[in-house]
Image (cartoon, one colour):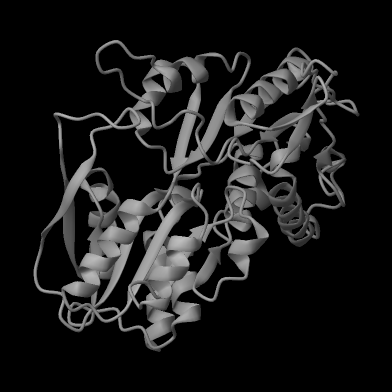
Length: 389
């Protein structure tokens, strides 16, 4: 594990406690299990020091429920003391599976509900915890990160509402520059390219990673930076689609896409990896996959950090049966319905160990530079895949 020697020689800034809200409980439990393993491996060398009291525990999770009244209002509770603790709160604002009652009517929790619950727990912890940190894999309102004409600037305002928080950790922020709205707070955005390749190479052991057999595809202009990094690290070429829109029409608040135009070399016989930050309805991603296949690509793999699947899986099933897509790889950073895990084309890139490493490194107050840069790990993975390690 990177930074293990630094952790062995350093002390935590305060006793670690993890508050995984109900929306993020499953992921929180996996993260907790990894941290327990990490600390058991380092404790052998530090058992004599009284400074390590409470360092190694069987469980770092605390309960932090948000019970609701009949009106739909709620309150945040901490079921145990967090005084002097280094508290890490985990929340999944996209978990739509949770429900609550409003005047007898069943209501599914929205991102707004989850964000309000996070603020309630922060309010309960402020003034007691040594430090409050937030792990919010999908950054709340991150798609509304800039103002055009008479619009709200939701992402920046939301970050400013997290009063008393020292650090915010997120993944694949739509625009990391939104951190400029909170210049006195820590803000880190991580990316999962290593986990994507690890899952893909395990599922497709015959995949050849070179310029003659593989190409990275950016589905639009916004994903260019991710695709450029991915192609450079893997040593393969990339191509890009750009969306031609009808700017004379507005549908559901957006200008509709007329066509996807491609820029790049030929795809004949090559495997293609489409890389993006999220699948919402999946319409654009599937259209790009079809066009890639029509241009002669061999296999098409879709890699996306957040799989929201707001319109379900019917279209994905259809495109898989027609041979337009071969794999859809997404992380477990947001809620995934059980239906997704049963699909023959679906793969999960597990991020729990990565998050555990981030939390443990921050608790020791050591650099997370190596955690943020996956280049070395990808190179070692490719060497192992190619049999040169």
